[in-house]
Amino acid sequence: MARVTAAARVGDPGLRALHAALDAATSRHAAAGFTAPAALSAGFSDGPRGDLLAGNAALEIGREVFRGRLNAADRARESAEVDAARAEVAAAERRLDLRVEVALARAAGAARSATRFERSDRWLGDAEASLRARFAVGEARYVDVLRVRTERLQASAERSRMLADLAAATESLAALVGDALGRDSLVVLVAAASVDAATVAWRDVLTDAPTEEEVIALFPSVRAAEADGGRARAMRGVTVAASRPQFAASVGVQRIGEANGGPTAGLLLGVSGTLPFTALTAQRRGLTAADAEIAAAQATLFSARAVARAQVRAAQARYAAARERLDTFDAALLLAADAEREAALSEYRGGNLTLVELLDFERALLRVEVERTRALIEAVESRGALYGIDTPDTGAGS
Image (cartoon, rainbow, N blue to C red; front, side):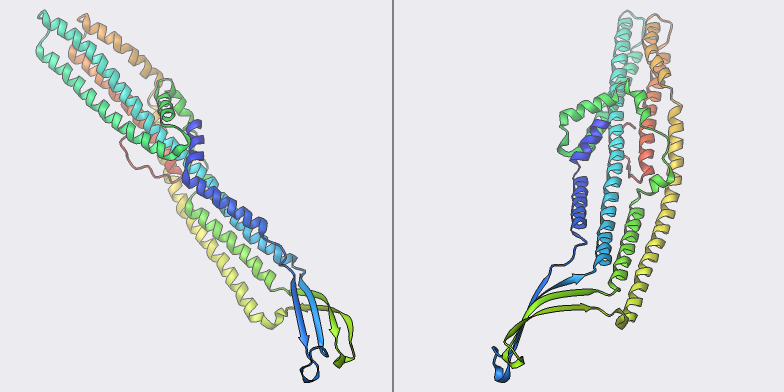
């Protein structure tokens, strides 16, 4: 599970795109909050009868000053974008991990079921060989041979269906890992996850249900509403900062022409500032609009969380039921019953067990083992459904 998950985090194109978006947002945040470049200005005024030499000339350099609040507001705005991008990456990683769990469970379940049907076919083949030997000496009926052969055909058909499900589930898993894991390695990992020794280890995946808040935070609608709320609060900060007086200072030199008592030179110092009280109506309406944006985002978040909470509680109930159903299958008893199959075959060969009893025993054991595999897949799928992972029925392991 860890190897496939790590490969999926590297190979999934969607996750790589989200990481690129996070890098871009981080870069924009690093570039925000700096003062604009200085401005160079020059001016001329002519003297009498358009004589430029008799007039004045000035050269000034100026820039905005006291921009601390506005720069901080700009950084806060970009910080909200970084937070939203980071939340998207974290949620995508968690959801990808869960999709890997579901896909691997389906593939392993199909592989295990195919192996179990193959084992049943071999076991029935031994029974058929014994039955043919008894038929040859007149101790068995040919209809019994046909009955065993029919059972073998059914087991072979089910195995073929499981192999088809395995191929489909493996393709789904390969789509998640992309080019980060070779097909041969993926097949080996699926086979390792389907062996008898991994039966108990799969239970480690099915941990207790997470808290409501942990799951709700990963719902797309909730993340979008939280991101919109962060952006709205940041934009209100920009609006407040822009409503404060903004100042600019300049310094330069001027040439005073003959028409003004020159020629001589002098120093120029200047300062300018905005007058917010001249636009009080616009500022008040801007703040009102910003507050309305925040209120709308909060209302949307409240609604999204309420819908998500209802879905999570229903999914938690299904997950608990799936785990409870899985608990009814005792792995130790199943392994012991599988070992008793050989004893049952020996009893049949010795004449102490009828063919009907032998076949009923094999059918019951096979049905229980397949049901346990199905219960495991359903439990993993219901765990993914907790986080809103769509798990359409693919038939794997069913």
